[in-house]
Image 1 (tube, rainbow, N blue to C red):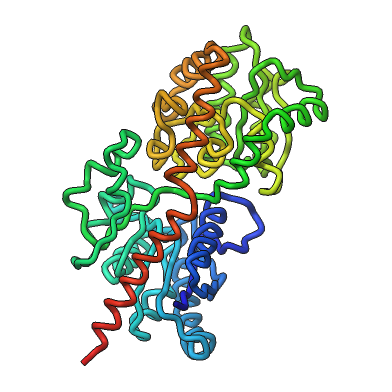
Image 2 (cartoon, one colour; image 1 turned 90 degrees about the horizontal axis):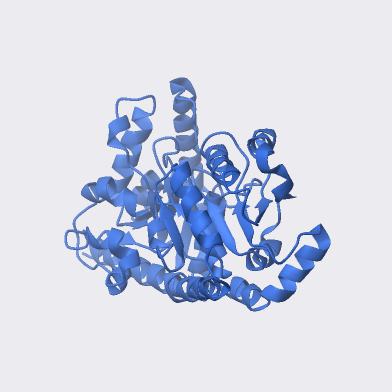
Length: 412
């Protein structure tokens, strides 16, 4: 089928790396893997983060103009069977998809929609209302973050024809966060486990010894001590907050042998480096790395340590485990469905420095055999439940159902 794809927060072609861009690109790959013709029909950014109502009105007006142009231009020549919007919330509502899908009579589908009614009287109330209207129109809402379901599901239309592939896995303790709402989950709410193409990470893990030796030689790091790894953009706000929690936690572990490798860059790099000043001699700054080089770095390390302040998905945590790393992370968003607490790593309360320090210390105290078991479990679990092949099949089945329903509705 033909799928019109749009990401109002950040287009897949955005030059700045981020988890949002990563997931958007993975969704495109998964859809194309299923044989669909997918086009990113607009790079229009609907994001307004300052609460400026005048600016929001300008964005809304610009969106209305672009929607008309798309209908009269590209989408008239290339008529899609379905509209797919990734990541909409009150600061980045979808001003394009709902009116276009409604006029063209095609299904409107969303992924990772967030609805926060507690902010309905705030500076983004019009954006929040637009998200609510979009969800009421949506045939299906794919949810990668289980925390979104409580507020999103009540807005969705009531219909039959659910796929709910995640229900197959609900016997596993990792997915308890999804199981709690399984009985009352509407058909239009479709949980999707965070996913990636696991093959490059699996290959890197199998060549771990070679990758570790190369990094040790290049950067003069002793390979006999555990290597911790942190991967994240260096920007103010939650990312900086995660780095600060990590730095405080590690500052209490100087008596133990470890080295921290940091991958990332950004406008807050000076603040990040200042936070690690007490343990500066233990930290190796690798800067921003292209996606193609990251798998080898993941595989060369032992433990992925990331507090994950206010993170929704945690794609770096998923990648790290796919490359055989154990994880210590904050228990927030979808991370509880990614990390198997006690087997592939340890989940700690979000922002709790002392709990994070204890978890890292416990890992450093494990024998080599126990660390190897955690490594194997991580790689196997991500390969089994979070590979793009399985998610591609799920997306395809759901979208085929949406198009079939729309066709039946159009029949006299």
